[in-house]
Image (cartoon, rainbow, N blue to C red; front, side):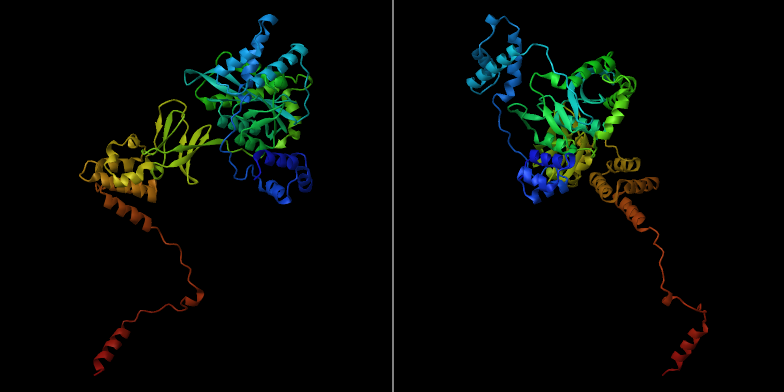
Length: 503
């Protein structure tokens, strides 16, 4: 079974570098059928899902160790900590690896630091369509009258300096995926290479040099867009210095003073328009004769055509409670009661929560970002109502149920009668089977005639359904009459006389 990384390499070699199937087979030692399946299938994975990630040792603490070494480097030489002291500090923070790994890292870092002058960097240059840079920032805004901290995704095309930013409530994986969808749609294409920090949502393990173990879902996204990802060296922000500077500039240009908007959607629409305005008015830093927008128009011809959005969700297994609820991010969402007590799959999008059970969508809710909220869909509980109609009166899912006026009035009238709960459930089942609008029209007619009974409303519903005008019937020419028959009552009298005359 091919891993996601191999599939991504095959797709880039074919669609970006223009290699044929035979050459890819020869270079990568793969069969023609395998390469043909990847190239022609258009998929980014073939049913493989990694169930367990290997737990890293030093990799997860490498960034923390680098921070400790930077702080220690500011001290006089005689006051600097030994590698053993740093090892004990990491042990207190949860490190379970060996001491010799820390010792080797500390020795190599200090030798490198001593041999390289501080604040010395190499200027970078990029060809049109070659690379973009990405980073996150935290900004202060006022949404709906309340001050909030939003996470802003920054994209920058390294050649033209074209900028795109979008705000999100979180820095989670699904937000990262959606940010790429919005950015590449904005640019109208994709660069061949993406330069990133060592994001925990994208990288599961830092290996030697530039090698990284990427998250399979993020790898699928890069494969979909034909991007070759590059992760910066830890603590080497100059490798994506353009977007680092952009973070400071965008904060000064757009987020001081705090902008005020009704909601996140309005904020993002404003950010997109401001990105276009800045590109149209600011000059390119290396070519002062053209604006950034003009440089972007030239670079756009070198971008990989945008293949359409990637399915920007992450999946998580969950247990459906006996009350047909699933929990995610401190909130609860209802699902169809057929899945109660079973294991389902959550699909977490940036703006909604979906629940899949046996490859069937059984719930779709707008995502909530507060705490302690419960979103009900009353129709999820209809099968339970058929067995327990009395729950309609005090059931939490049925409070403030937005039903059409006719059906709501009919249910209110029936609920006041003995046995009316079951009649109410009968109408709700009919609404699910025949459509809410059809049942509402029948209820309005019953309310008008003061005949609000479930059997009457069902009768009106069936009559309205069966009373449709029949379509025009076409009569074959052989069956059409050539002469119109003439009514002659005398023929009946002749028959009567014949009957009387017979013995």
